[in-house]
Image (cartoon, rainbow, N blue to C red; front, side, top):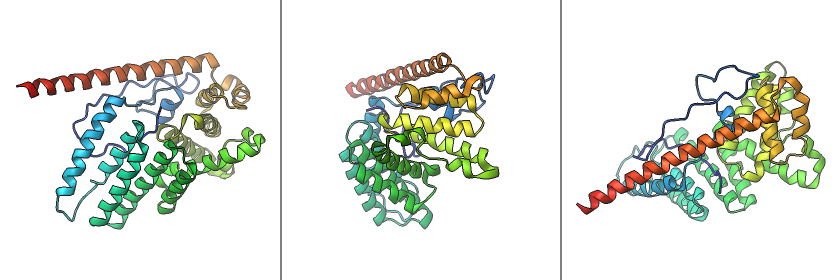
Length: 314
């Protein structure tokens, strides 16, 4: 499994091995001559730099999250804070290690925990939104699209702006994929249609916001078979948001993944975009950087395990 990623982040930090972020490559020379001073999630997506933790990291986190949950359950407190995130982090690592059914059981246990503590309305809504989103990811991993769609709809019902609109976008994608099977001509439009083209004066800003949502969807929950549609929509949003150089990178990735109209969209950009060769070279470089970081992560975890065994023998 490639990247059933985080709906949450590891906000409650236990001593997992962590790595410094890699230097970020410039998306293309058409938009910027120098890399941005801060990481750009969109460029991470179009340059192949989205980091996926190794199985060893997830296995360690499963152990640590289970221990944290057992500790939380023994505490008697009326102020649990955000301890419910432990359940979400555990569920996500279980999904990524092929244990999606167990992840659903963990989220049911989280619901029981939430019923036993007092949270204000805002915190409770956030906790439930994360549960719904992670359930959707688990159901997708199990191939149950009906339950996945229902879970994403529950997340949006609890908070229409959940995760910056990511759950909403996932719902649109699932409906689109169903319809494009019946009506192949729909493939010429991205799955968000012309929503960002009808916003008037705020069109560029709205398109850029949609691009961020789409990049987040790729990073945090899409399946490999979905990515050709998402990258094409990302290219459309970037083009409308006046980032045509970056749009060419997104179109190229959609083309590589088999989108039937991405190549024509890339060609239509002309000199405003980048060539296929340039886009491919950035993607290859990004993938090599991810592999390098994963090797460092494995080496770090191996050292940690070795130290633990040494202490155990003393």
